[in-house]
Amino acid sequence: MLQTFLIKNFAIISDMMIDFGDELNILTGETGAGKSIIIDALGLILGDRANTKIVRKKTQSCELTASFNIENLKSLKKLLLEIGVPPEDTLIIKREITADGKTKCFINGSIASVGMLQTISSALVDIHGQHEHQSLTKPDCQRDMLDKYGNLENSKSEIADVFGKFTSFKNQLDELKNSEKDRIQKLDLYKYQLKEIEEAKLSEMDENGLENEINRLNNAEKLFNYANDIYSLLYESDGSAVEKLGIAKKFMENLSAIDTTAIESVAIINRTIEEVKHLSDIFRQYKDNVEFNPKRLEEIIAKIELIKKLKRKYAPTIKEILKYADNIKKQINFYELADENISKLEKDAKSAQTKLKKISVELSEKRTAVAKKLSKEIEKELSELGMPKSKFFISVEKETDETGNYHFKSYGIDKIEYKIAANVGEDLKPLKDVASGGEMSRVMLAIKTVLAKADDTPTLIFDEIDAGLSGPMGQVVGKKLSVLAKNHQILCITHLPQLAAFSSEHFHISKIVADGETKALISKLNAEEKVTELSRMLGGGEEAETSIKHAKELIKQAKK
Image 1 (cartoon, rainbow, N blue to C red):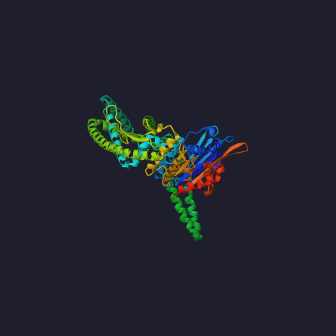
Image 2: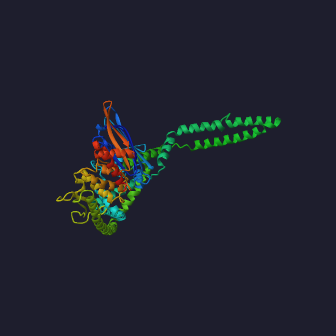
Image 3: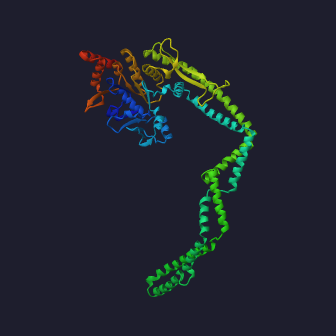
């Protein structure tokens, strides 16, 4: 859930930090004070498109930082790993937008893209109301919600598994059932390529080994001369190292005969002479083995050129060329046994299709039954939310292709769409086409109330959910939000004191003019300040005492 939100130089907000509570957070204030601006800023943290106009005047950039507690959100942590962000219990998202339109995003200190923010946003926050960040209007989300509500995820997972196998069998069949001419051409090509690679007799050790060998052959004369000179200096020539060490040995023996303390030096020089002799043998053998072979040099040069050619044709490294050869061996075998493979694949595909059809139809029937139940529950909630004449219907239609056969997908054969008729006489329309912001918010609240246990989005935001509602209906909405806040963190902007009375945390947004600039301010209200704010929302004025009494009564009723 959202813990802390820091906003700097955003529209009329100069510097604002908000510490949200875990349950129902209510935001109130005069019209134009900046309540919806806070929601707009949250939208940018979640990947909304940035507009340079949002950067506060006379500043170079705005900065938004949101801290989320995701300790228990396993699915989100998995998603973070998939996009390359190490998951921690606290997720910090930061976004900077400059006055010239440039934007920088960071997730837990690592540079991120706007796309990455959008990828994780739906697992963090769901915004409803005047904004377009509404996951429940998306077909995929509607299907997932229905399946979660009906405990149908296992059935859907089974379909995804069988669909994957069926698709694989079909793709292989399509390839094999290409014209005989195409198959023969591919077979001839693969055989030619395999022969070319195998005749090159490649080894992963080739490249370094060949480079070293060509270097030795190119410098054979130098290598021989160096080795011969070393051998001569150590052993063969007059005055060699071995000869001089032998003379020194005799002097040491004479010295130690007089002074026995020098006996150890005789042992040391004996070992040194043996080591020098061994070293001279190494270079004698080296010079004798130096190869003067122009023909071998030509062969190696040709091999290196062949390797370069094969790299251009097949893969950038010898290891990958050899891997490619293994793959085309399988393809050759696959094509050579085409008739046998076609027969087997047809049986496998038919078996998978039969199973896929069976479990898809079964899931469709379950979805239809669940959709009927869910529609009634949502309709009941809408009635309690001031839309008694509305009709809600979840459409579950089996999709077919041009030939009338089921159109299989990884999630089944159903096209699922949430539809509503908000008023008597209206036709059912897709949820995404609901025009009224107030209606949309109430529909979302009704759905969220019913699906609270199935929906794992931790933070829900309702922007002016009370649009078009009366005071008594505000109490109904407030009660439902407080119940929903037991399983979700709620942020709600409202103008209704009857709704605001249910807050766990109450924030007041105001604006002031200072130094010729308008600034938005936010304050978390204590119990006494909350009463004062509700009184203001009730009208206050000359009847302030009455409105304060009324405010206290609203808070008392909200606690029941």
